[in-house]
Length: 423
Image (cartoon, rainbow, N blue to C red; front, side, top):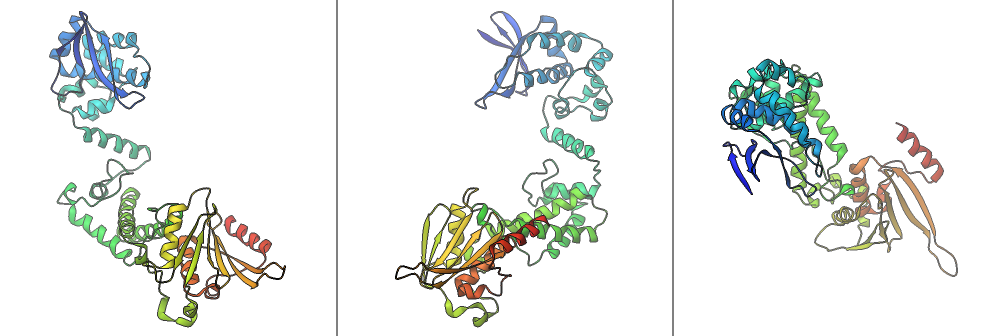
């Protein structure tokens, strides 16, 4: 039989219950193996209940001291009740100076007290009882999050100025640097918002016309890492030139915002919108327009095949990259496009950032095997692959001549690849 004896308005602050005639403190902390909240209890006396009822500060201090014991219990272990009981008299019944001394020796949850209004300066100065004079039953979780964020920056030697903080709040990254940035002007002090918008305008101007495309090699929604890094570097350089007083954290949050928005614009567009299907500049001779394909076969390293036919609703390059997005994996990084009619094809080696173009020199027949010419080239990221695929789709192997250096000797090519990888 369990009855609640005392509770506060905040449901998370520990309750006092009576269970089988015994007073016990009950609190929720952590989670079990199924991610359900765990509940712990330990025995208390009537004298402890009187303090808990009448002194919010001592109640919260006890809570902060017991929480590390709950963390130590993990998802399955039992609470060390003896250790919890040993905290009762020193926290609830001792003089303030003795409580302060105790908190210098034990582990306790500082963030919990900060969320309930504790004075941060006094807490860090070791005056926990004095710090709790401003304590409230209601909790402000963001206050504790801000404290921990500031502490992490301080540990890295980062000191934010007013504009730095305003930029981080504008992007929603003040509390959590890994949060996807968004534009939140309402989170910024109105007096600082014009300065924030000047920095944002500098960044926008710097990356005008730049884009971050898809990278189907890493999944349907992956982005081009090289393009991301180029845009980030461009924005950061421009912002640092125009606003040298900004901290690195502030500069990075602005570049992260620009990159995230550029990637989002591409992610929402179909592959045909990436400008791959038509020859650049309209030069039909250079692009091999006369050799435009009528049927192509796409295969991967698992012998899965997909065919594309002229007149399909989507272009060949878009269909191929869609095939890559569906099939690419850590153990599936070789993809081929073959034109059986013309006797030529290309093989993309994503694991090595390289490509091979394969041309039939002599067809097989009368008991002889066909003879192929194989040439290799290094590729600069997904952007390089896109150019090569589009050129082949438009004009076959002949159209690839202007794109890169083609090496017929496999050993010589391997040496070139190793030189590139060494940097």
